[in-house]
Length: 279
Image 1 (cartoon, rainbow, N blue to C red):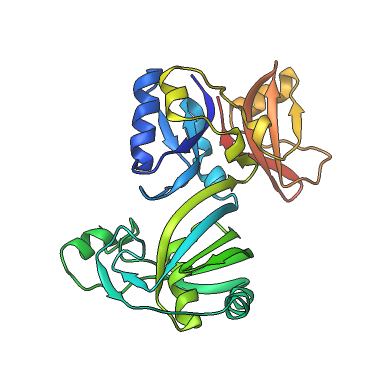
Image 2: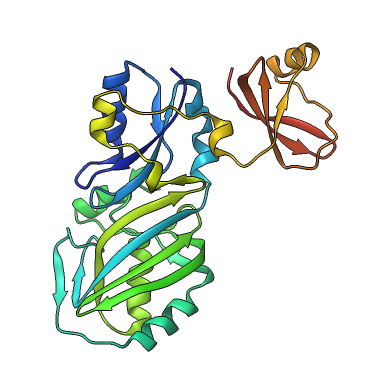
């Protein structure tokens, strides 16, 4: 079985839990996902099957869109509401201040990776240091925030939508925005509503997976790149991972042969070379 499945990950499940459910219900050994969601978070989780697990890096690189909630007046060690409360007090702010802070975070900024994450430092995951009470210098990464929209501010809950670059930790973004707002707050809820062209409206539920009532997608269904049908001669070249000359300017192209997807190639000067082999 090969292809892609868009799942609406439920709250309380890890991304690996969803992978295991798909694996067990489809009898497929090669199953992966293209962007971890914390157990607290819900929403779009793209599952790759069979040879399409080779597309993981390409799909993970897609922009992601979220709706997030911030609970004001609470600070936790994990940067979300499930963590140990470190500080709690009554705070207030204004819609005008929130909008001003949101605007200041648009574009690139340097984000400190949260200590409760799977990022490795010296061969060890950060959450392992955190759980053992060990101090470690947290990595700094540059991320891009494309959109920040305030949806509501009611009592002590701020709800906003954001579109961000891959690798952006919304927990960390909230922490940094609260620091600039000069209040404390933590992530209360998170829903990934979009990843590239994958939308939550098109996602399947866990029960759909268990009941085998879902649709498997192909690359042409979700990638906004041209599709090129290979003739016999060019197919032999692609089979061997060779480069091909095409009168195209697109950075990526999807090759098919006899209606089967065989490879994604990327432009390399005047030629196209393999990016992802699907055969």
